[in-house]
Length: 69
Image (cartoon, rainbow, N blue to C red; front, top):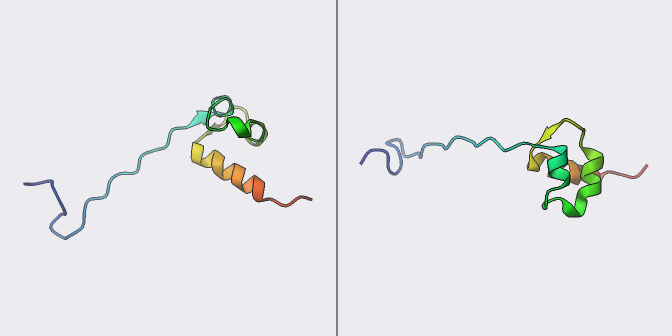
């Protein structure tokens, strides 16, 4: 039964990492996921850029934790 279970060395083969989908600023601004944070997404992202959902969430989190000057 080759290909099932752990390999001979006792380790399971690593699954390749999936590349995350990238979206335009416009797609993210009008997405349901960011509907409550539309204004901040609009302000933080650059026109013409492509972003992953994870990257946008990290930008929002970093912005929200920033200090007021």
